[in-house]
Length: 313
Figure 1 (cartoon, rainbow, N blue to C red):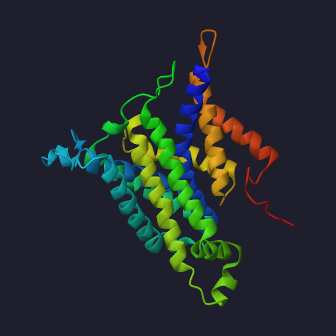
Figure 2 (figure 1 turned 90 degrees about the vertical axis):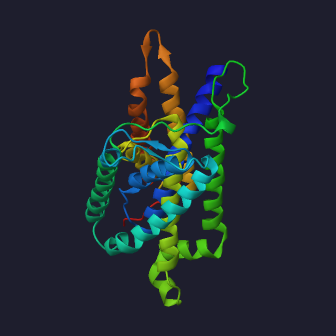
Figure 3 (figure 1 turned 180 degrees about the horizontal axis):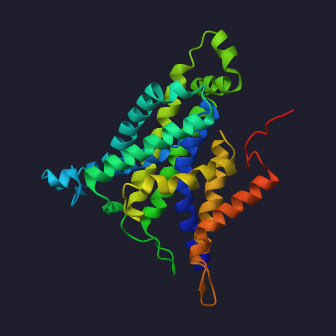
């Protein structure tokens, strides 16, 4: 029972990171039909901005270290860091949509992929040459540094807080999209943007806000995942493919689908990492497992778990 609880909690925590990224990707892709391969760059920007605000960076290589800036940071705490990250990356998302993404809405998917992936590489290299490639540790908040009081289970409290933070943020975004006039306009524009424009509604404003919200979720994901795995300039590209897999499995544009898919993938990954058959550890197969699940689900239901079926007739 203790092992099952441990797998469940670890899986929900890992799934929560996938969900935060996938919800942002899904609403951007489902609403704007824009393939954003720079989403991982927003993730890593959020991680570094949050680290700078919350505690600090120790720079031992790169241009900043050579210029004498080896110890940077504000030390304002994790809560302040999370709020600042959400605001900063939200604004970056607005700028990205206005000056880059908008010019590619009517272009082929390949053009969108090339420009956003190129931007992600640029961000990664800027971080690498400025801060170095050394991984930066992110400390758990002092108020979440204990362990879960469950017999036989050694799970840090921060993992539980990641699940709660994700549930809160995704719940807010879901309510905004499903139960407000803003969400109604966004969903109507997704189904028939020409008709919405004929009604005199400017879609550029809600669309740019959707992009900013998706970006902010990615930035927060980068910060909250930091205490579990030290951050480095390549972390954004490493997490991007699992995030896209989560979107595809859940169904493009479906927030509930992203939650379901992220939960399934997180628990599967945790189960494989913590399972041992005899002397053989299944941890090396944890990444393979999530792609195997993706293949099975898409063979049975190509539109994803909760995606809308597309009529190709």
